[in-house]
Length: 105
Image (cartoon, rainbow, N blue to C red; front, side):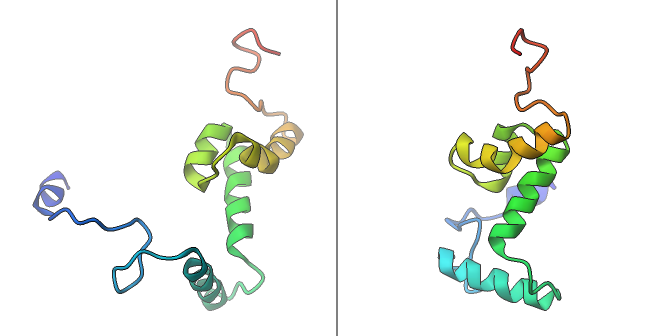
């Protein structure tokens, strides 16, 4: 894999781009997500709902808020905690990695 990556020509591409290689706009991504969900037979799903489900499942698996932020793209701890703390508490999981181990309650 390293040798293949070494042969790649670096390009200024964004992570999410259109089929034409241009950066995606937020609305365009939302429209594509709608098409993809519909195509998968999941018309009830939304990008927001999938993002929330991803955050919740990461919390259920024991990920801490900063880890969830990195995956789900949340900009503040308050955002990710709103999605996950209630679920983590219901599962009896700590909301901080050091809970119970670092002298914190």
